[in-house]
Length: 145
Image (cartoon, rainbow, N blue to C red; front, top):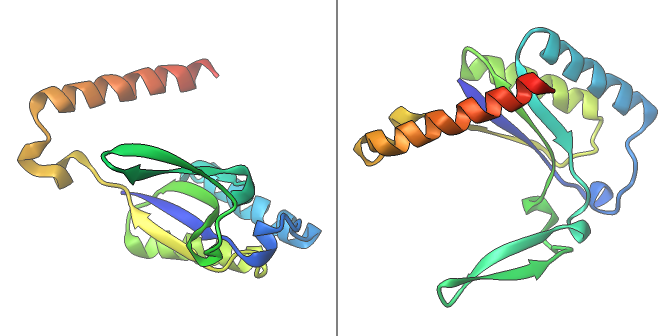
């Protein structure tokens, strides 16, 4: 099963205060171990919301709202996409990331990535085929890198 591990923004990360050398060293060690064990599929830190934008519904259309955004507790400072055998394993990795981060984030949220089975009959054979083709294209692109 795959999980997205979202590191919550803090006032410091939103002000682009750099993590300590210790935090960067410890976090890169945890990320390297996840990669070596085949758990880490992707992971990146994000720039502050002042560099971002949102699309919000407005009369049936999308309206662009530029950052920064005021509700820091609702913002994401970074993410990892991991593949693990259980919820408990996902939690173990998240706890290691949390400890390595030394308070630079306001917490970590984990969400399981939906699979085709989660969508039931609404995920038609045609939609499944398109998704399989899309994943094949992505896999081919990754193997070129």
